[in-house]
Length: 420
Image (cartoon, rainbow, N blue to C red; front, side):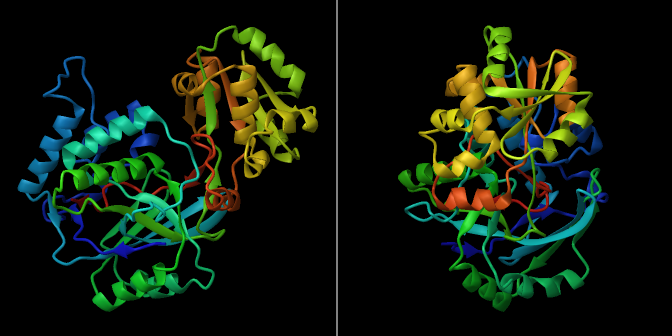
């Protein structure tokens, strides 16, 4: 169950940063190289320098993206580019956005979540990859901070926590920023002891689920274990988390598409796909996505050699046989079918090969273009996983394949930092 606590947030100093909107960034794992370069140029103190620093062929053990992030971070603190709030606080955070043509408003808050001995404070739903975890632990060891919050949701059928938080949203926000995707982010500090106590008490009985940030959560837990063994003082026993209630208004989920490159004997493997799936040819990307949305049961979109198809499973008995060792909750997920039937059974990829040969994007047009430009050999387009499916799988303590969900919109980075 959730044991939350306020913290003295480290935030950009508006007296030093005149155009505060120039220093924020999306989460590190959705930033392309081109966008990173743009953010570097946007402001000399953009948080991108901390979360996803540039690399160079001249990098050494003593001079690399992690050591440079540390140097910049501590210099910004020394120069009061970033300053600590005077009192322990929680932070109310709203996002106004449009999803599938519908205007929505999500409310949540940022605080710390304490680790417990059994690590049941925050339930995961996805498997993680070794490479991103190695990257994030190196960064955390350098800066000794949570630079961006884990994105989580909790069950609160009476919306009691929202009722406590909403009065703050009628006040002038510390941050009021609209990003390039036309998402409006508003941010307030709450240091009132009584309000914090109310939220803390209401959260005590709540189950918390990770929506996004599995790698960072696991790394934070590992870092805490390392520091505990070394008996080092500090706030390592907690992690910064963004919390929002579980409801249709708050949780919008997009699909994450797969780009595959470097599979041996790919032409033969692609012919094998026809043994298992019916292929429906499509005129273009939009035609494929439209037809896929109308299909019932398991469906996948596919782009290969410039041609688009919708794949539907021919034989559910065969599907059940191939997925017989999978958890029952998996068997209703397109991403699980893609992982088990296509990647493991047809392409013969093991865990390390999947990590090496598969990349991910939420941008369907980018995926199709990547195949056209031969940056990828084939692209697959699964349907989005529903938020309720995520909840059920997490409660059953199973994990879906990597990047099975893309909760939208994600919290931006740079609003507040938790320094250990």
